[in-house]
Length: 522
Image (cartoon, rainbow, N blue to C red):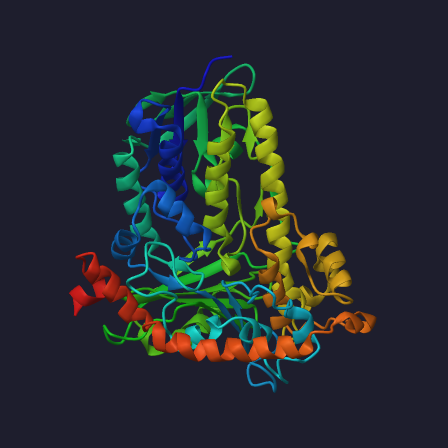
């Protein structure tokens, strides 16, 4: 058993270069540590249906050494404070709330104050006040299109929790530049074939332009094709189309009507008859796409739905069509090969799990790195962890669909049918009918979404929890009401303190001596 001295990453894009940069930092590549080579083809474009992230990305960018202003400028990035779900509970035009919000900030829990969720369930926040609006001021800030921080705040910190929207192609380019500055060697070549040794491990990766490449550990970031983990190693893929139905996407890049147009500081996810539309604002354009189920509608109908949403701004645009392979490999590390990104699995971009899973995989490889070459224990640990994370994310995404009151199409009726739910989600919902979700329902280390995220979606979808006799223990109603009132007042203060979203970006770039693409275009 030989120590690992060389790592070969096959495939670039966000998965390849984010993994390369993180491992180069973690393994001391630039200081004579483990050597990292990334091979990518110049003929293969970036696959990206979403352009959104989860708040964990701030820690990742900080860890690899990319400053916030540099990231904003290079990637046309903007701030994301959560997701607004339009018409998920009921069809457009139906009486009742037409949207709910999943904020990234946690419910208020000031020292000495009671937990607010039980009191919200009992109506102490006021009739008709949404849970997210009652327990955090973030929705008020997002509704006003203000940012989550001030330009004077430090990198990656601010009064409110946040992530980003960004241009996927520019992000990959920034990571490639930064990764090479950390000592990663870049090889432009196309993989032709992969040879295995007598044990079934990878022996050689043969490329058209650079010949044979060898390493001690191979990381597959080759996307849906999965050149190493799938084609060469034969690790089976577990499809999830019996639970998550969307398998197609049409995407457009829609310019703003004017350079100073306000920018939404959340993802907007608008439910449609056979899927949903994402709408995210970058500095100079909006990324808009329709994610849908090919079993419930055809491509032409899906494009008509997208064009109705976009309006005249999309008349001259041709949407990009994507086929989504929804599912994951239960064994993502086998022998000397580990998958990261789409080669390991893909779940629809509803809650921005894609880049979060890349971050998780890169972090695990770095933390579990088998320097001595004994890969078996690390592989088993990695596989168990990633399987558990996928299972929990699937339940979280499915919950958005399962609780709908929509019955206007087969797509929504099929999603609301308990036969399409996982057993674990069915059990969770059964428990939560008599009590709200709490931390003991979750295993923190393998969860991507904290208990508050489940609560925001659960009650945003108007799920009913009957506290029953448990209300007898709720003896702090006066304190809870005061806290709800204080949160509303803080929301008004935040609007005075936090700048409009576009102004925040311009201020941060100006402070760093940069100009945004939107300002340059103007």
